[in-house]
Image (cartoon, rainbow, N blue to C red; front, side, top):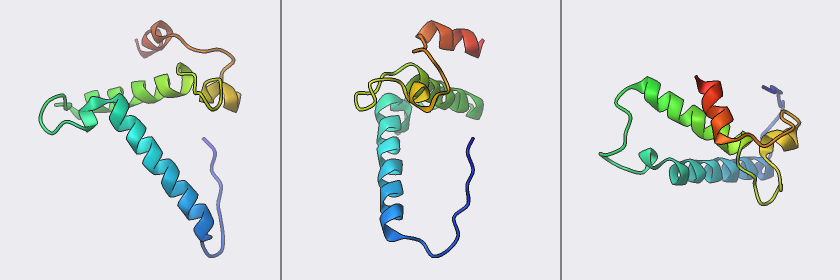
Length: 95
């Protein structure tokens, strides 16, 4: 995880860009995991199950899904992984 500190007054242009990224990520989560859009069905009864579902989503999104704009996975673009992970590999890692 990368941490960095910014000092000084906020720059409006940078804040707007970060807000768009958060909105886009929020939409992606809602579209990929229907449990975030339903009001009564599909929700997690235990917080642990909810945490695992979100973790599996982000693992798939970053390591297995090839993004059109990058033409690779985000993990490969960041240099964290050198291959596209299969669903089976992610499941094996979870066990």
